[in-house]
Amino acid sequence: MNLLKLSWRNIINKPLNMALSLILFALGIGLITFLLLVNDQIRGNFDKNLAGIDLVIGAKGSPLQMILCNMYHIDNPTGNISVKDATPFLSVRNPLVKMAVPLSLGDSFKGFRIVGTDHKFVDLYQAELQEGTLFEHDYDVNIGITVAHDLSLSVGDKFESTHGFMDDEDMGHDHGKSFVVKGIFSPSGTVLDHLIVTNTPSIWHVHHEEEANAETEEDHNHHDLNHHDNHIHESHSVSNFNLLDHGDKEITSVLIQFKNKKNFQALSLPRNINQNTPMQAATPAIEMNRLYDLIGVGVDTIRQLALLIALVSGISIFISLYSALRDRKYELALMRVNGASPSKLFSLILLEGLILAIIGSLIGFIIGHVALGMFGDMASDRYNYSFTVFKFLKAEIWLFVASLAIGAIAAIVPAIIAYKTEIHKTLSS
Amino acid sequence: MLSVKGLSYSYDGKSTITFPDFAVKQGDTLLVLGESGSGKTTLLHLLGGIISPQKGKILLKEKDLGSLRDSVLDRFRAEHIGIVFQEAHFIRSINVIENLQFVQKLSGDKVDNTFIKSLLKKVGLDHRMTHKINKLSQGEKQRLNILRAVITKPSLILADEPTSALDDTNCNKVMALLESLTDEVNASLIIVTHDNRLKERFDYKIELS
Image (cartoon, rainbow over all chains, first blue to last red; front, top):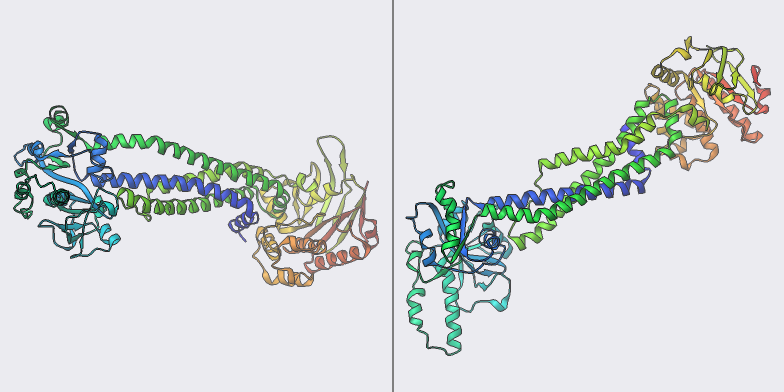
């Protein structure tokens, strides 16, 4: 029977006190752990999805909404822009632009977004194919690994898209053509895992054919469909399609990587676009910092609440040890009579505080990670992000050290009282 | 083995309790009788090294208890003195045998389970070995109280009012056990009490007034 074992026995001898202290401690640490993990992983995911994108150009509206929609695929598009307006930025001759990636959004399949783009989009995320080949022709798609898993899709499978981003059968397209899975991306930890990628004309086809079908059904044949057919029903492959030849068509946005991020002209480009074109430009880093600031208020409040819980749990440990001390004063005096030094009694009580803190924080860490797993399941569907339950942070080590400090501080006064146990007075009383 | 000379003690500098000189040889027994307030417990605590003499000397195994540093006194007490307290208190979070093992460990000895078990059997507590303290009856607690005082094989056993709350039958049983266990470890025994029934059992006795 050593001190550690005796401390443990003393703790479990009062199961209700122990449970109360542990619950409070674990809740505080769990909440802080959860916040640390969520904050780290959201930032990590956001940063990963920046993919070196310096500028997003899209329809006028909320710049944050445009960033969230076109880079993180969370929000709805602000609208569309014409290819003609975007041509200066899509052109390879633009001296500022290293890479310009067009995006056409608006469709989905069972909640997973379909992105009309070109192969540069795949390069942007440095994605590799796990299986199959890159999309080449109209209606060819590549799917992210999460899409493949969640929808049990394999190479060669076919599906029809839905208009909008919700999984709503009433919004299904009636164009008689199906998308064909040509390849599945390897896991990248980016938003690409949650996307269905095809070429731009496929998105145009889907919408045009639906419009055409609707008009046919309503017997409004006064439109010159042949005119459209000349543009739309032409079959494209990625290699022979040039977006700039379709100035009358629309896309949702353009993702831009600059050749030189510090170039003055590049820096002033967003303002020029906002002032002189019908489009808007937004810098992802600026918008994301604005978002962090907005979220930060709420996170700070929860963090303060968590710290308050941790403080209360520290007080709970103090009360638990202090009241137990009054109950055990005769035991402590007997230990002194039997040869225990004052420092041994001090250590005994301190150990009890530390044991409670260690167990409480370990339970708290488990709670934090399990909560992240539960939150991750929800967030994965809603925000197109995967959260890793088994990722541990350096900050958790500091949190553990801090929780030990709380346990030690809570135990220090009772430990000093134990240290000062007066054998004669106690045994004579 | 033990000698007390010119011993007195005062609480807060008020009335002083003066104790008679006496000596006890190894294996001897001594009864210290006295009424309430006569200083019995104070003497027991002085002899047990729980408080230090303000005046006079207590020599135990040729060591002057008053001159030992606190840490040395703690160690000395644990090795050489066993005390049977009036109230039978134990560490409640651990069981019977663990209480005895812990006392052995605190005294600096190796835990001797064979010895502990043999004594538990002798006092009829072997079936209670793994039971928590709160499961024991008052009588069992009293036996364990005595057993704890001898478990470190001390040179001197001090007992504080071991029989005052007992009827004659149980008084005799407790005394027989105390004497027997003291013999077993070849210790000297000093009993401080106001229980006059014990007078006849002891040849060597002093009275505090």
